[in-house]
Amino acid sequence: MKSIINPTFIRQNCLWLIVVAGFGLAGPVNAQPRVLGSIAKSNLSPQSAPTRVLVYGKPNIDLMNVLVENINICVSIPDLGMGNPEVTLSHAFIPSLEWMAVGGQPDIVNGRAYYTFIGNDTSAIPISLLASANNPIVELSFDNGAGWEYVQLNDLTDAGGIGSGGGPSGQSFWYVQLNTLGDVTNYDNKFYKNDGSKWPINGGANAPSSVETADTILLPVNPSPENAMWRLFPNPVAGPLHLVSGVSETVQLRIFDQLGQLMWEEKTMLTESELFTIHAVGSLPGGVYMLEISAPDGQRLHEERFIVRKE
Image (cartoon, rainbow, N blue to C red):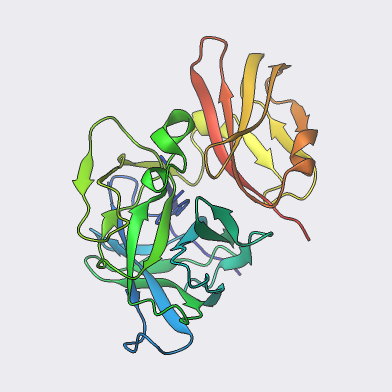
């Protein structure tokens, strides 16, 4: 039997705890927690094979009996002319997540190999994250033939021109970068940029000059009337995606991939509480996507992440 006491859903308006996309949590409604993401080598010998990298979450307050909705982790490896190691997920510390690797890996962009792993909640088992502590989230394993000695956490939107400008609506995904120069640095983990908050990055020959984040937003797990208006299912999805509308009006529907690229859009009339089917989702590659629903005047009515799974 699943039992959850006073759950709330922490939505980061932006991909995640990262290391991107999404780390949804359940906790006190009146709190404004921030979760730092950090990474560190799990073993000391730089030449051991495989090398393991641990990803941690460090909240500024205790988050007891919280729910993790999903996590999107993008691992980037710079091409140093020695070949890119194969990255695998060796251990997950959150029992309620079912992990999958996005197909067609690695994705080579601007000389970097990107590996993406998605964790999706399957059983709603609450966990606890202690304040000011490195709470292990997941462990990644990679062949160390290229002699990697350091890892660091950077902002994908400023790396090699990927997603320059943050993508649509300032969408920003975090990732782990395996590097031969640099340090281990902690950052606030958010999914969307805002206009002002910037932190300098310490060291690393391939590190960007700054990162931008936005504040964490808290929403109840039992949806408020505003959030209860919209329903998106199934999620994860392998075929058509179904949307139950929260309004009766003409809207613009857009789907973006995890790099902020527009994959599909349609202007259509929705009727409140009635079902609308998005058949185009069935042709999308496996991965994490964002559905954006906007009014004719451009006002954003609803945003929701969903996962496409391909066998």
